[in-house]
Image (cartoon, rainbow, N blue to C red; front, side, top):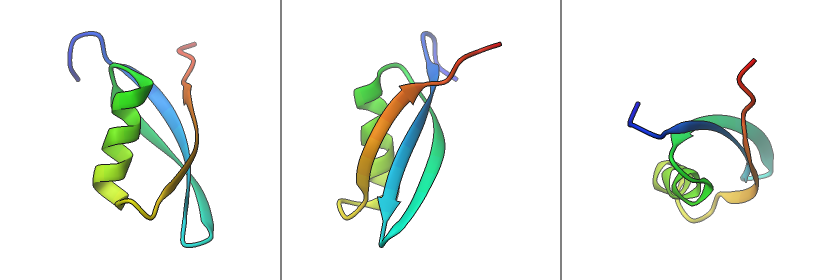
Length: 54
């Protein structure tokens, strides 16, 4: 994990299947980039939220 990184929960839809993935990134934009690199352009990103640390 890099300095300043947080855990983001990314809700995506790929080929009609909705899924929630956990991504370590510094910003929500970087989390979106990571998902696009893994799943390609056909993955629709529905939401990106920061996971709470309790």
